[in-house]
Image 1 (cartoon, rainbow, N blue to C red):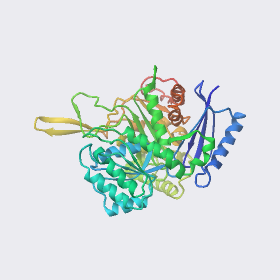
Image 2: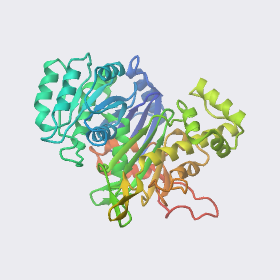
Image 3: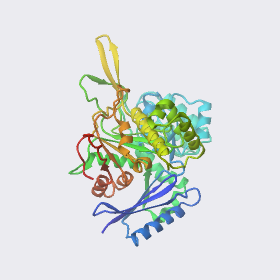
Image 4: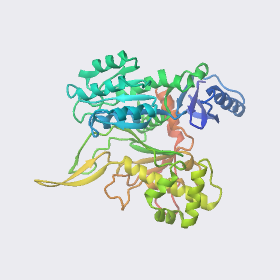
Length: 476
């Protein structure tokens, strides 16, 4: 009977899933503290011992695959030409590859820009700029600035192909580690981010895994495949699309609420759903990830409240102003505290609802009316998520919430944000088994099992009594 061991080296915990590939079921789970700052094998061994005890012995694993977001995740800086074109394309490629962006730059880098990049100490830089055969001056200038810096991380080149060779030679000649791939925007408004995503993944496997100390567990693994957010995005896309003759669940949105950030993943084309709407700007990728670094449950809780408005937040959580401030002060002082009393749970649920609402609005496209010589035109920027059929929630606050449906309802279209193209009537589901990362890891080596595992990992949330709810029932 074939089995797989799937591992997520997280920032706090190393999480394990033992999977029976024939039955496509999770047969064992365990976790131990992530010990990347000392020796990653210590936390892994602790989790394996827990798994061994829980299962009464470990089976032979045919696949031992891992993802990682430990030690700060994959910290990246992107550099492009025009903010809304090549710089935006580079940002999409980096986020889709599972990166945590620490800086985004456009036009010619200045000395202070380079000083800031070096100070950020990123794990990788993605250097883009210019369409193929177009502007090469800016990317060559930026390469020269990086070449002359003390930057020591790998640099992925994904810009004007006419300049790629000279840029590569410039960087390598200065002793930098450089990797050349295809242009993220070869022609005006044409997106080509998959080659850059794959290049980033390969650099992650070949360089970053070693830099983070995760390769110390090499003897216990086949490979560290990708950053954990990339595994979740791949799992979400696989679950949406299906494999072979097995259909997927269709276009979907995933909301992952964490202590420091809220990630949103979508797998859909996002084309205008209404006739007469004209799309404007850079096309959106089918598989898209956004990260909201100011919308976390703990590290940025005060910012979430300030963005919503303290009075509105307090009313939603049914807290008075004094109690709200006391909870925010507690969160500022201890980002690891957990709610125990009713008003603390109410505070957390209101934070989760707000983070969901704000992050999905930012991820979704917008409509605007533009007046032209021939009359008004409705213009869409970004993805239209209004007809998406499924929203999946994941993350500890959702898994442990008394009413996760109430939290995920924050992703729905609202009358007070009429121009945001958020989902209107999706089914609401939860990834209670934390299976999307496992689905993503398995997708290449055991696709049939990966799809079945993904389907079994999500379940539809019960509809409120006396309410028809959203959409049709879905089987677990």
